[in-house]
Length: 162
Image 1 (cartoon, rainbow, N blue to C red):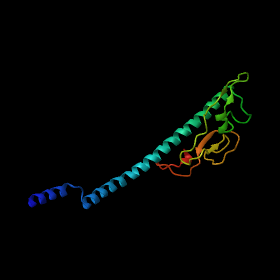
Image 2: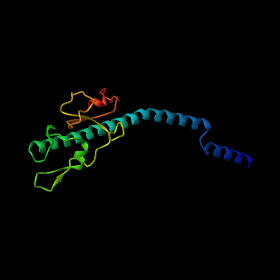
Image 3: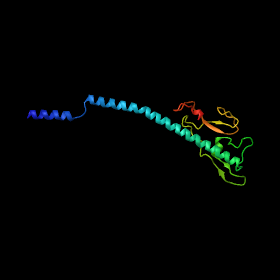
Image 4: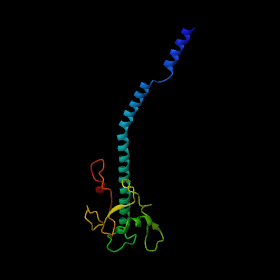
């Protein structure tokens, strides 16, 4: 009977669980796999921020173009010397009166979006009178917007040049 009990104990101990060596090997494999996935996750997050930056810039530039189009068709009042561009981004959010005798107000943006790279709702602005690569705003009108981030994108270009 004691032989039977002993073989039963050996059978149970071999099925009881993982040995320390097996546990260490499994942990090492998981560590290697997770460390290989980290750069992919990091790249994915950067890529999503860059795609969002492209989207936000496109939305603001489209709003500026719609404002300019209405100004060129004399459907909204514009300041003399502004060339028909909005005086600032807040004007696109607050909206402008459509026509002289009309009570209707048109808004071009719901809000000034946050720059996904810097995390702030601060954008670089360019006026018509400014140079194409200028980083200082003339202050009369908003012809173009750009990110104030000094970083480099994953494609090698600078965010400020987008």
